[in-house]
Amino acid sequence: MGKRIVFTGGSGKAGRHVVPYLLAQGHKVLNVDRTVLDVPGVHTLLTDVTNAGEVFNALSCHFGYDGYEEEGGPKTVDAVVHFAAVPRILMHPDNKTFAENTVSTYNVIEAAAKLGIRKVIIASSETTYGVCFAEGDKDYKEFPLTEEYDVDPMDSYGLSKVVNEKTARAFAMRYGIDVYALRIGNVISPEDYANFPGYLADPPVRKRNAWSYIDARDLGQIVDLCVRKDGLGFQVFNAVNDTITATIPTREFLAKYAPNTPITGDIDGFEAPLSNRKIREVLGFREQHDWRNYVKV
Image (cartoon, helix red, strand yellow):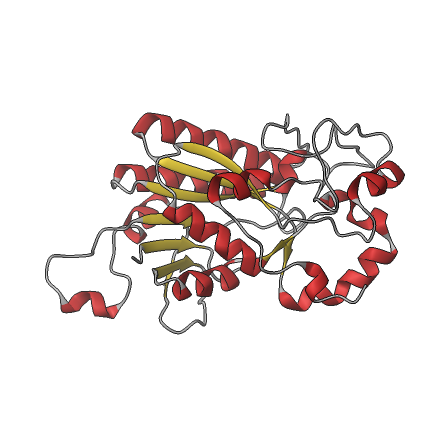
C-alpha cells in the first residue's frame, strides 16, 4: 500500500530521480523545495526549510488541490524524506553551509516528531568519512568503510552531516520514532556514465569518493525500502551500489592505489570499498543499475 511522503529537496539532482521512483511504487509525494519539480502528479510547495514555521506548515498541509475535495483537513503524513541541503562546499561561505544544513535538518526532524510522523529519512553523506573534501591527500583509516567507521570530516559540509546524524539519533531516542540516515555516495545520473571511461583511465581521481557511487535510480529503491521498513529506531545506512569503479578486483586495486590503508574486514571480488552490506542484509537492497551496464570496459 502506498504511503503519503513529504520529500524535501525533490528538485535536486538526486530527488528528481528518487521522487519518480517513489511514485512508481504507489506512493503519494509532496515536494518541498525552493524550486519546482517538473514531474506530473507532484505538487511543489515553495518552502525555506531553514524557517521552522514554514517547515511545520509544510509537513501538515494538503499535498495538492485535490486535498480540498474532502472535509477534515490535510491527511496524515506517513514519512518525511529530507534531502534539501546546500549540496557541497564552495557554493556558499562555510558557515552558511554548516548553518543551513544543520538548522534545516533540526527543523524537519523536530516538526515531524512533534506532528506525530513516525518515519524520517535524512540524507547524510560519504563526506562524513573525511576524505571527500579533505585538505590535501588524506588516507582512509581502513577498508571497507562501514557504518561503524570513526567519521572525521574536516570540512563544513561533512561536519554538518555528522551533526545531522546526531540530531537524528537524539529525536529517535526522545520520541521513539524511526530516523534513518543515508550516507549517500557520489550520485550518478544516467548521463553521468559518460564520465566513467575517464575515471577508469585515471583511478586516483576517484579516491575522494572511495571508488564507489550510487545510481540515482537505485537510491530511489533504497529510500522506498527505508519507507517500508519500520521499527529500527535510529539507523545509519551507506547508500551506494555494490561494486568498485575499477576493472580489477577490489583487494588488488586497493593494494595498488591505497597502499597506506589497511583492509580490516571482508571485501570479496569487486565489492565497493564503501560497503553497502548493511542495506543489502537489513533492507534487502538489490541494485538494478551496475555501472558496467552503461560503460564499455
